[in-house]
Length: 453
Ligand code: OOG
Ligand code: NI
Image (cartoon, rainbow, N blue to C red):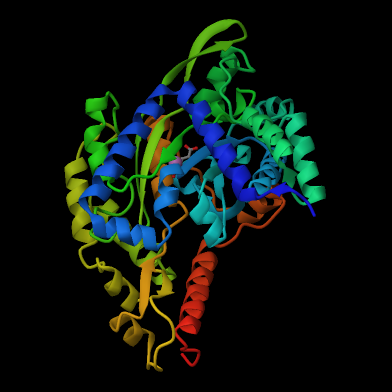
């Protein structure tokens, strides 16, 4: 009989400690959290049906704590150490994102819970990128960067002890978890003192701002923490009045009656004071972001999304200064016009994933799932998209790096190398949605006495 704290509880302790830390480090984050909480209250107050739907789908409680963050790592050793750290909190690598196509020398995964029950308790996620020094044309500079990185240790000895303990004992007690959380937090804090001199920083920065951000500090500072809003357009519109300069366009699908996937917007990175070997200077890394989540799509739905988005981007490209943002939004709306915009339409077209639930006990045998839905015995709620979007992520990266950092790498995805560095394989997101959908349908049909379907 062990008295281990559940991984879900450790994750909640950790995400709330991280949120408190970031609030003190970046005050604008606190402003954004308050703004999002107010907009969410307004939306739920004005739409009782939405509130009831979210309650039934077990989505309401998690909304208040829901956050994602992002970090950028330098070496394979760091990536595998962080994987072991997140595993203690019930977070596992899901998805592979190749950002080299967008001119960024990184590839990424998202650490997140994978069970529906764990997700509904606290879906805390961390978008985690690994820098790809092999893509730097200046090999000499790449060697310098690798040497600097080889000298740092981003996970404290105390955290490592607790990670090993959790791996050996199968979990942590409440007291051990408290130590683990405090130690783990150290990995993600901001360091105002760089590990390099100003000249080395400048060389790395000239190669790519991202490289300087990863290489020149003692650890992978959390660079944003994102709350989830129910109305991203309302928050975007209210940001300037709260002294927050938002990026020009919202990434992802257009505004819809039935939200799909993920819409995101960000505020620009802050210029922060940094000391380079005793010399004062500055660095921009940390920014703010908000997101609105909608339905997970099937592979067919995702194909359609990718096509609609690619057409939009071929029509209009938004300038760094926000030029043509209105044209972009108009094109986005036009290109998505044929994408079904109601839950039932999405379900019938096989474009989105759903969680099924029985609304009563056994009923007389029925012919089909559609019939059970029509008779009201079976309900289908869209499954929330729990992952990220590579094109959107590239847009967020570029907005916080400044578009001058763009370059194109003659590179392809390298999932094998990423998994090798990770020391594990990444889970395919759609496998998780497909399984959640299938299991919910089986359970619901059993409850309704429809085992024959
Ligand atoms: C991560 C940018 C991507 C998202 O939500 O897609 C991202 C980074 O800048 O490190 O945060
Ligand atoms: Ni983000």
